[in-house]
Image 1 (cartoon, helix red, strand yellow):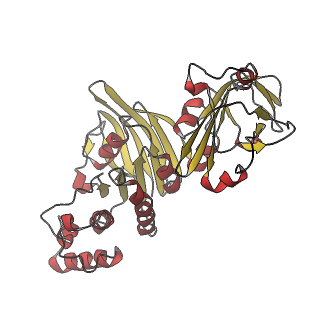
Image 2: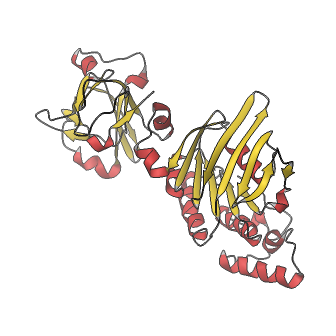
Image 3: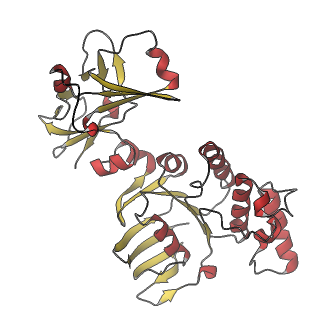
Length: 360
């Protein structure tokens, strides 16, 4: 199964221009609200019509403006799950699952029975959506989609309306339910955790355009640019000057890194994730940053330290005008024990594998 999409659509002051093709089974689209993620899914489903371009799934053309092809949504074999699941409130579970199925009565009943068993809805057949939990509603919505045997399933922020404590459990449940689905699934989200957990390939969008695309883990490990690194959740950035093949001056942090790997020409920034630092007590080691503390935040499951760049700390400056210039070090609950009963570290050490070499 594969999808090939190359479309443009203008809506007021907003312009969507997106192009990608993929045969990955699980695709994630990550981006802030209003960047065009949902518009992309609606265009694939046939809810919105692009101004130009093409949409093909497994070689079958769903939309081609030049050839005047624009299949109706019910002809596209596309399953679309909305944020609120869009279940019919006055229909029971079995009625929702069977709504619109163009089958004979016997085949329709057999398909509904199969979906009820597959999604563990036994005993809930006569319940209405208002009588179901969030997880049960999710299973009904997915059962209704799967009853159509779609070529592709589109998930539009399916967890955004849920309480935080439910999200992780329902994400796990949905991934389990989709495990044996042979078609493609595209998940749209502004949550990095959801996208990373779910997708094999990732498309990062910003202001209606593709900012980056590739294997999900690879994009998180090596974003390539400051913008992409920021979208994947990196908190620490410094302008950088390449001194030679193995030395990089971090201008904003007042230190120089010595790396074993070769530093490509054109690198002018560095990114470093807040959880990747290693604390050092005692003598300064290679690739260390002096620990000049500006502030600490205690959260329920995490402690966050905010540090001054080395030169500012050495000069005794305790306040900077822009909080974004502070360096973040975050440690999880499980790691707090290494700090308990000790003074703050003398240094934080960079792990070379975690140093992101970036371009602006």
